[in-house]
Image (tube, rainbow, N blue to C red):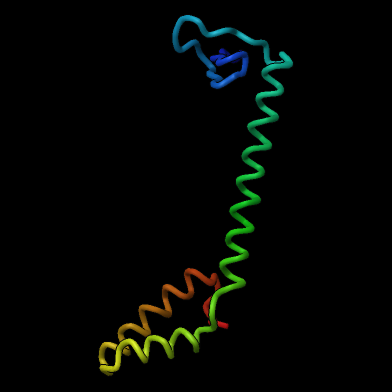
Length: 103
């Protein structure tokens, strides 16, 4: 039993209970409500697909861990700084890459 807000004839909000005056009650099988549900499902599916593609692109373009270590070695020539940064970079690399083996 959804209540809806409309803007220019399009449903812009659906609520289980009446929020304020002017909202229109639609039956669960009303074509406008079903179209809104389908559009929302399509939007969520597209967002999930885009996110999955972004993650795949990031993981595919990650440099190898050895390349990252050599960059850290050049940026931090001091042995103590280098050791600390390599540990930090390794954790961040694992989180970004999604696997602990590095390559």
